[in-house]
Image (cartoon, rainbow, N blue to C red; front, side, top):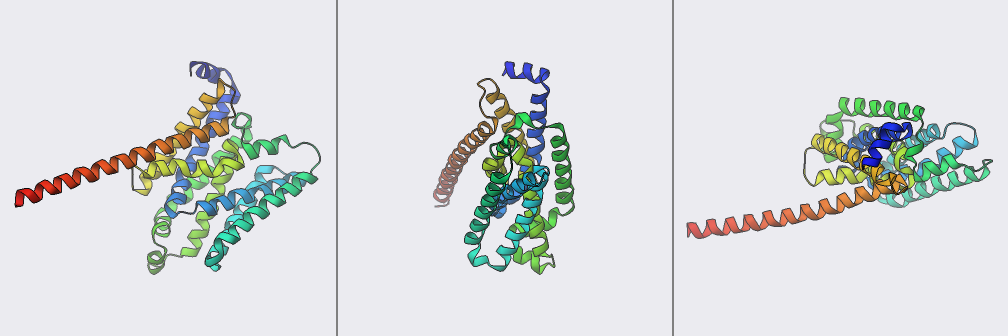
Length: 290
């Protein structure tokens, strides 16, 4: 750890990597909470893997892959949301088809793009150590967008996340806010691609929020705790991968997965203890009455 801290003060690329992890954690905490609470991880996965088509097309036509990723993610979010609203009974099959089509289109565009696309490989598998300064500004702008929209429409998102029918009875345009929620998830996917890559993005989107859900039940508190967990996991993953020269993205995901497993086991043990304590207390109260 001391070696990493010394290198962090010396090397600009490590400082950029740390900032990228912190910026990604903001979107991870905000939108990951909605994904976990509303149980739309499969939809988020469909959005994430459809991004490859946009990235491949952007490379083929000479544009920035991140711009293509953002456009494809937003388009996939709207399409998947529309599919879920119209054909709810077949949503799993259709989302899986869109997932595969997006990946297939991306591979075809990549195959027809001249040269060896090392940048695209870093987007697929993540390379936080190579995040350029302009991408940091791009990530910061996306964070500002997420915080602004969530702050402005928090109550509407809360109603849609927990009870769509009740929200509809209250006059909230559920379809609009549901699609907007998926678009924000798409923006978060693009944020996280910089850190862990397209392949592992779903894990980082959901695991910190899932850990937070073990200990807090308020949506705002879950967002805050998930953001902090994301920051800790990304920073520690970066530090742990530096010395042995391990891939940073997978290291971050393994650390997040370990934290989740330990948290789930601890939460289950605490719940059992509380149940036993409550049962003993109730039994003692009954004996006292008798």
